[in-house]
Length: 66
Image (tube, rainbow, N blue to C red; front, side, top):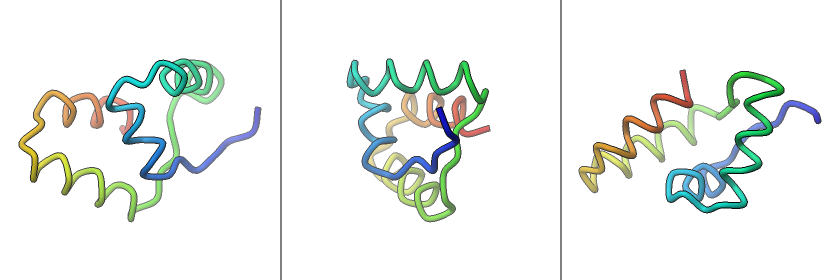
């Protein structure tokens, strides 16, 4: 498996708990320990979650993005 840049759509699916995406994230995190996202994806996810006041998803996002 090669390192990958995760886009906003995939990260959104992960935060929603989509089983296939969660499984792939688990495998990826075992291999690389952290995900790679662009500053644009970071901003899009952060602003969307803050707009929706989705505190649990914000905590989950910060858990995987740090």
